[in-house]
Image (tube, rainbow, N blue to C red):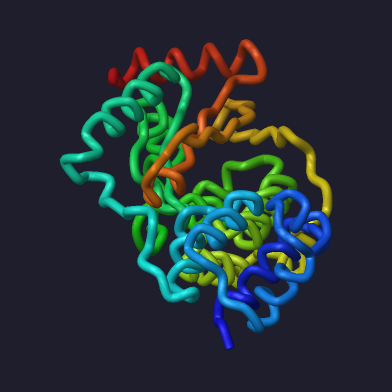
Length: 268
């Protein structure tokens, strides 16, 4: 019995498509698709890639589909610091620099922070200046936001932000963007002291606001930001497809002024 069938069915369910809808989009018969999902027929390499494209399956998971069907992976996975990705790193640094004096960062599928601009380093150093304690492990967005020693204490609307982050992480897990490590980190942070147990049972499919403001407060300074997440448009590499560029934008003149003063006081 083919191992790829149940995975194809999983992705069809994740994309909320009926067999008829998927068969129509992929220009195959419903009967043949049924045979593929039940393991009564084995797909060709071209068929796996065609169905994966229609289902918008991420590259990492397309490779898994191919392996389960008995074929070699299609998409390479490079280290971000590999020589072949030098142009990409330059592009990322340009995007981050253009966001000054407001924070921006690059994260991977596990929510690990891979790159930041000077504004992000200045801002988060300012928030936690003189505070004891350290967040465990590599710099990670989820850990920084949920850990008692992270930035959580400075987020005035933390419950709202935390709920939005959990929903986003769960949606990405369903969509295949994340990996086992990211799921482990999410479960870890949901059990940190002070994190409401209700966040562990959130429905990932529930609608959320397109923009969730983040209100940071330190002393007499308040920074009101909203963020946007950008992906690379035409990646042909697993690593590049999984990168997320998050840019923070000020919501008021006070935040703009505070950000500029931080830049002037500390430099790049």
